[in-house]
Length: 358
Ligand code: ATP
Image (tube, rainbow, N blue to C red):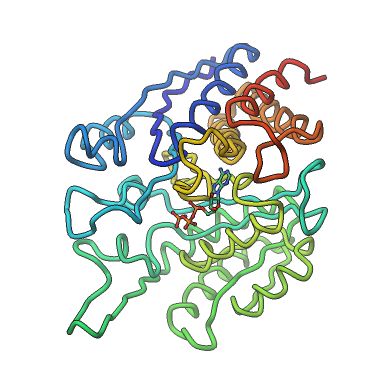
């Protein structure tokens, strides 16, 4: 029996709306899958936690997650947090660091029934998640941005061999199970040492996988290749900020952020989290697309299935993806992908689709 303790962190903005539908889908897939038990526990996070408990990431949330198998995190309105307030940490960045969730795995795939710029895209951006340019996680203490005077800012970028190698390993193992093509993205003509170390570390890992085709590009040139022939790529490994930007670009290529899932993966914990932010422009309107979070939860089950050698979790993940594919192919969806269903109605359609899978 695969029994998993799952933390549910609703997040800000559209988070609670898309999470509700995600949990409905998970509950339904659980009832349909024998020997799969998902125990959900809601944990405080984000602005709700701040208003109730005075902190955006309560200690109880961190400690509870550490005792669980995985979590599902909604998006967070970190742009609205006061960074000078030590009780308003960015929970997403903090959890990635604290739980050592070093790989942010962000797939982009085209779906029948969804208007997109191209057909036949099926790629994954694997983004380093714990260091790089992001000032909230590249120092042990304080921020990686400094102001020597009011008109000057210095920003640090952290790249280590250890983080680069373990990220490359995740990427290359994904490629080995897919189209056997790994693309390393860097900017080592300018960032010679940092990107040079990242590139060299990835190549070193690649030496152990002679059947994987490995190529590499400067990030600027790659941004162009990606919009010209995105079907040519399989697994892309890159540093934190490049990966953050490129994964929004790949989401745009397949129909938008509402379809873009993600998983923060460490060696002992998994945190499902859609690629997008909290979308304040549409929050509370019941129009957000829940697919991004539903497919993130599907990735969580898939990875749990692989790690625990649990065919039931794998089967449940497969069923969730098929249900989403069916709903989209039937021409259903929210406004962002050209449909007219509400978040709730679309979520219900996906849940019902689980029942009508062949
Ligand atoms: P962050 O920096 O926190 O990732 P962002 O600035 O990239 O945030 P998002 O919140 O991701 O901004 O929103 C970008 C755009 O995508 C907005 O117009 C938003 O409404 C839209 N969007 C994001 N997620 C969804 C979704 N699930 N369904 C529909 N539209 C979405």
